[in-house]
Length: 168
Image 1 (tube, rainbow, N blue to C red):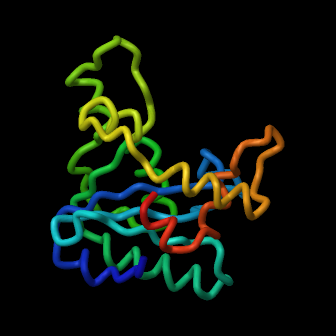
Image 2: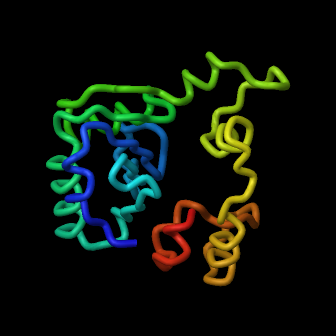
């Protein structure tokens, strides 16, 4: 998946989903692994791996994100987390247009159990039960990216080929 932010620059509203290593932006080990973006002009979205390049490429990509998201209205799933990433690493010049996690809690859920994940929301509200996670998991396992518990190491997903990662 080609990461061409020019597609998004013309749109006022951008959907943003950060993939990270860690959950505390103040932890020195915290890293942005990648970012998923979607907008009206690019509804299928794209994924931009961040951390697997050298430091110069990482800085260039972060700079592209700063230029592409400054002054925009952003849609997050769990804005409490994503806005901390935006504020620390990207820009503070943006508006939260919507937090789909809050919206999900407002519309309710069938079994009364609040789920946190975006995939749960897509499954319950949109009926999107099929994901490309199996293909990604198979690739991670086949390439030796396995956690200590024997599961696919999602923190290493940025290494997957674009044709697999773009579907995820």
